[in-house]
Image (cartoon, rainbow, N blue to C red; front, side, top):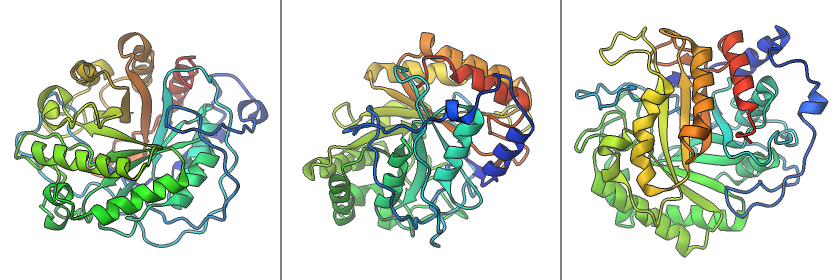
Length: 401
């Protein structure tokens, strides 16, 4: 997604102080009682509670580029710098607060988000967002690149997420970030080198650490890869279906050899109804199927720019993915305001999931208030009192955990 870090916590505080109370006044004690989640061997159960660690995590949050919200790939892509690289500076943070209670334990869809807080405290931003929207999150999304300072397995951050009742979704990017020329090939991290075993020491180190940690998380390897064959639009791993499938399968094989049983693998593509099937690595190695759903609205000066409903963006993707029968996760969900009614878009989206899209089991919000490439787009559900109120009502439905 082409977006930039935004003071999410300041937005949350401002909205709380403004007295937005469309859903009524509820005390924080009632909304957020402390709970002790049970141990979870996989990402589909409640996460394990952990003792409070002394945290000095590395600020690693990045954002993912946005694909144009059209049913067909852009024929002549223009690569742009798409997200802010992770900082390698150590950020001293206070231990995260205890987890809050899940509103609907028997719900079918878990919510989560990606945010870009200015202080790098992603988990703190998630907690503040939970207070703002009055709903417990189940997932937290972050990014780690193989060739950068955040390449190593971050056990402390995973533990901290679990203490908050969150399951990490780690977007694992095989490259050294290069936002000046993001689609340029990087021979050191080419898909063929992964399948050939050149990175096995790194892969095994992650798998062994995951086994020892014994906490559930989800790996989203080389996301948004499924452009037309031979086309690299914004990542070097795009455009090579055969190489992608081989690399994905090799990674899963390494984790299985190392008995890393708490790790699940999310295959997260684009245009699933077109080129997506070419990149699908196989039912035996995929636990989740994901895709991105962004409504850019009408203000962008591009031929593909238009206001699109959630159904227009997602229905064809869902129909294509249904053949695999896997649980689905909308890995990045958001809408602009320009060109339509954002509050109605959110209401329609969340009300459609249960009756029309029963395979969807997770929805991750792109909670970023200013897009990098199009600064007038505010993706946050809290961009207006009306959209925030609509979101609160929508996710209070028992279908959502």
